[in-house]
Image (cartoon, rainbow, N blue to C red; front, side):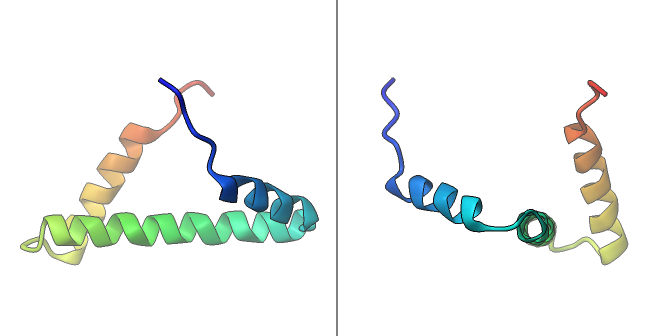
Length: 71
């Protein structure tokens, strides 16, 4: 399978190179928070009958399955 490179990827890498380490760390935290919100939103849409506590429990169960057990 041939994978075509995304032209925006180069721009993204150049942008990261221009950032300070502090800016890159801040961006990583922002992206992590965004991913969490998106995941929770998806769970709420998938399980509309569940309350907040039940959604949080499902979230924690699924996150536990993703944990890297190599360290």
